[in-house]
Image (cartoon, rainbow, N blue to C red; front, side):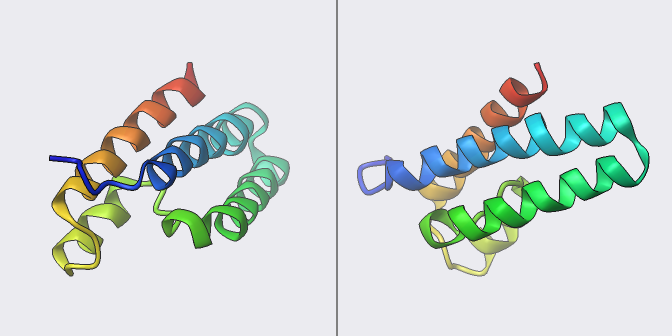
Length: 94
């Protein structure tokens, strides 16, 4: 299990989810209004541009699970992606 997992993509998912929560969601919760939404949108735009070529920039199990069901990623990669997303989101919100 996990022998063929590309750990660079897992690290990208972890860091991407961390930055999305830390900068985007926290700012949207703290500031609210248009400033918070613009910060969230810009954070997501930068992450998709930077991490898209590396990992597909799922950043959320809601994207990872359908990608697994469509057969585009392996079961081991999906488990590792989801674990990285949970860890990144927890660290970003703490």
